[in-house]
Image (cartoon, rainbow, N blue to C red):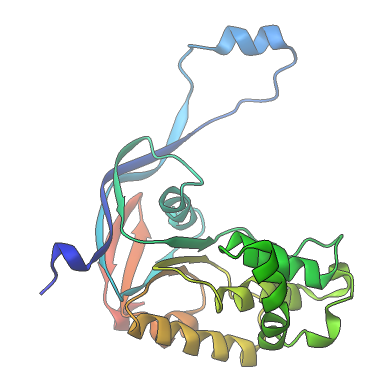
Length: 235
């Protein structure tokens, strides 16, 4: 039976819309004149209500622009909902931005350090764990290379490897496994299963059914600004 103590994430009556920007302001005076005026907007999410238990791995499915990434950004605090309540129980980590931890103008080693620090490590601790992360990512021999020399898939492995040494209760992944080779993807998904067994909660978006079916035990379909429960065999 699901109880309040097992609740990892709850969303009540969440609404999110975006203002429509008609164009660039040509002057400060033009910007000031628009203040207080009604701005046209379009709705992305309407009256969203979901409860997610600890240990659940939830796949978010739907067409591009259906609101999956928007909801994850609201949960992570990167975007503010227009209205509604959001309850998060535990430490949350989010990997939502493509290119996160893969800054091209610095060395690979430094990118590992930055990622580890963003995931909660102190600077000295991050430096001490770089070799371990590099081994997970298969980049041990590229630590002193400019990150610009890595392929897109190799760069994507940097934050995913660091996540495997991070501490969290809730993890948000937005198309984070794109461009990853099959060996690393398989290893990462096995790690996700271990996290799930340990009671950690994972929300993931992907257009790859194989990824979703490999470890998700629940699916939410984003359609017409709403969210609908979906059974595993219907995705």
